[in-house]
Image (cartoon, rainbow, N blue to C red):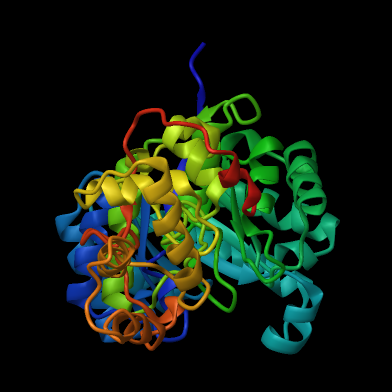
Length: 439
């Protein structure tokens, strides 16, 4: 049986770019758009053409060059925005205009200062105008999760009749939790007139840290498009992270029997390119593409990984474009990982010799965060009675201790210079001491 398709709508270049410090010029947007095309996303929201001449130019350039995916431009529900978006998308092979208008009472009263009746009228007029330029029109009722349900259904039914082909339900302020958001999507599938003529989309913000969970709840209740961004960037706490959504769907088909067109091996390259362009590093423990996502420091984990990577990894690093897993030597490492690193450096030991190196290693590892190859070489020499004059081992340790904190070190996440051990895919002798370190 063929799996249902989830449309991946990438908003890295629009909502993502609105993150403080993440703005991009036309050339940078073009580089990112090419990578998103290579990644296989279905829709690229290239920008907000009315925002500036630069954004208009970027959307127009992307529309002219990138031909496979849908290229989308954002517009408020007013004539000048929609006309500007249409002009920017005029060269696109597959153009989409994305119209949005707030529908919650708090936005209508305090931000727009219009009535519900005026909101309904404006939404219909905007979609009708957008439809006169392109066949593919998306409508978003901004702050949908705080909009009264009867009115939300009324607006969505009206814009479907006016020609909207995608209905995007944004949790604009990140207020929802999965049970709420899933129930909202389900209610819309049951109550909105003509809903079968449109695709339901989800756009979740991460203010409470549940954007991905909310998006998955939307999928489970009928959404077939998800709006997301590389590295989860976006307004305030960001958007749902594209790489996390894609890999949840891939790893857990038992719960989410859907497929996407994303080439997962391009996730890590996309993440790295975005970090390079914006200068914003990814947190080390970020799921899927963080520096520590495939790094193992605890002895029990390292021992298991050396015997069979499936013991502690549910996806392979190569499946998301990461070169390999790594074992980071530190105070939680066990003898097994230490022996593998020493072997890589050309040194093999009997058990008693290894015990002496390990004893010295633990003392040093208590003083510095990560034990690098040059530290190990000095430890090995010292254990064999070949140590250089006193103080030479302390020097590199002191230098390492003075190195920048982990969170300030630049990407790429996977060290390629020997500072971490690529895992050999073979078994190893069990050492009980490895199980004394943290889980």
